[in-house]
Image (cartoon, rainbow, N blue to C red; front, side):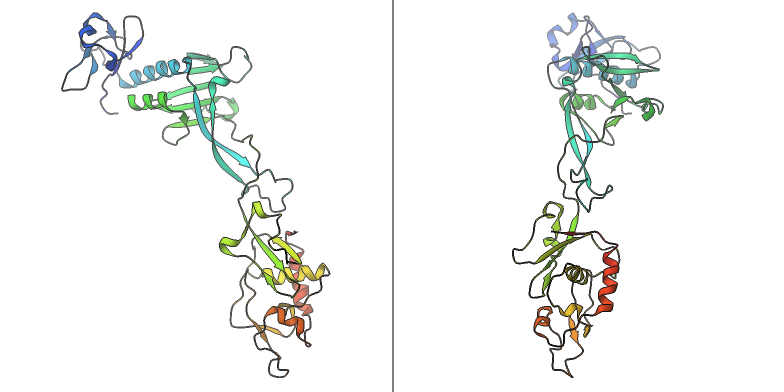
Length: 358
């Protein structure tokens, strides 16, 4: 730890004084003592060096900055709590989507998000005590409620060099602990001016409820939407036009005869156009599409999850059909026949999938 300059000391009344509040002409009329070791101190106020307190004589055994910072932190933070100002904390809590019980695509590991929530502890606690025993432990600062003594207290622990012991932060102890890391006076001032905000290198929260009380619908997933039209054509929005959770129950087109939601693909062999068309057949809808015709073959264009792929009609030479027809042209084709083998394979896959009709 870097060499510390003492900007705070006790006065003769036991109050903490900041060197910036010392009037030069009156500094010798007060008795200042070290917060860390209680030894006499003098107020050094010069025009070149920054003002500070200094021990009047060599302190036997030395005065450790750890003790000084620890005691200073406890005292100033207690004064902050005892003041009329808010005593705010902020830490991350987890919001779970409120559609958990109704959404077919809800997943425990995905449909949640963290949000930082702020609380004023003065609304829940009215007493702050230094070095107060609680069970087998002693808290640097202990927050309690004098009107509701059964309310779980909060321990504020100041870490200068040593973290809270594993036994203290053990979840089985069910202690609510806020651990503040202080390496310099500036850290204490920051905690005085700002909320205790969760941060890996500054503030840790142990034993606090991490599940938020807020209920709202989240948008954590993209959903594949299949839209079928009466002429046998279909559409699946891609990339930035894909359906999100908030649009899950809203139809995309007033002209569609069927809209389906699918989970994102789990197998490369899935093609959502084929899945959507076969689902529509199962629903009894009347339409024709080249995608399900027994005379269709894949062209050189590779199909993917979200593309229908180019159609190649193997009858184009013998029957004069279009070589690369569009899906909707099947409605006018006298040679159209459904590929029952394909339909059977897709139906088997559909039986294992989550599909939602809108």
